[in-house]
Image (tube, rainbow, N blue to C red; front, side):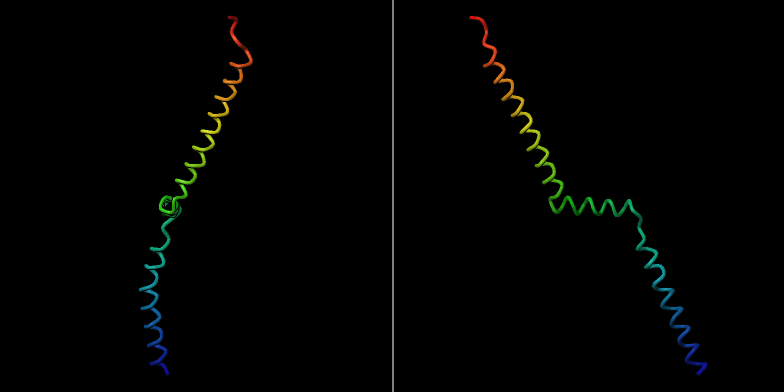
Length: 80
């Protein structure tokens, strides 16, 4: 019985010795995680979609300003 307990203890120590560095290596920190998330978002096209939406909003704002300027020109005709 003592032999089995010794064998189980040795196996447990061996498993712990192998798994502990692997577990510690998995804790990379938030900076690396943020870089990975950014890379995944870029590859998935999320950033491109956000840029497209921003461009669309900017173009709508420009169009609105141009329309407003055109209306002001028509409302205030020059003295001829």
